[in-house]
Image (cartoon, rainbow, N blue to C red; front, side, top):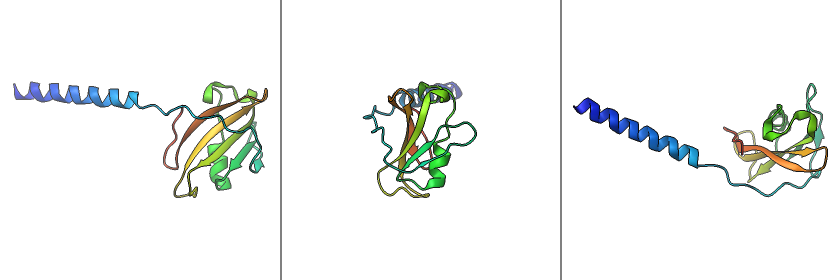
Amino acid sequence: MAGAAVRALLTIAVAVATAACLAVQPAPREPVPAGPLGPVVAGQEGQPPIECRGLPMDRCRELGTVHDGAGGVAVAEIARVIVSCEGAPCTQADGAFRIDYLRKDGSTGEIGRGGYGSAVQP
C-alpha cells in the first residue's frame, strides 16, 4: 500500500515538474538592429558571415555557427548571423547572449539565447 502511494506521489511530482518546464518559455524580444554594429568574420564551410557584438571572437564564432531550420530559416536564406552580448560582462566565464539572423531580404529573427553555460531556442 505504501509503495503505491509513493509511486502515485512521484507520478504527480513528475507531472507537475514537466508542466512547469513546458510553461516557462522565453519572452519575445525586440528585433536587433540590422547593422553591422560589430566586427564581421567569415563563417566556416558554407556558413554565413558572423557579426560579433561584444563577445570574445572565439565564443562568437562558436555560437554563430547555425544549421538549417535554426530560427525557422534555411542557412541559404541568411545573409549574416548576429551574436550579441546581453548584460555585462560578456567574458568566457560569464555573460548572456542572443543569436539572431539577418535574412537576405533584410528581415531579422531570433535563433536563440542563453548564458555561457546554455542556449535556449525561442
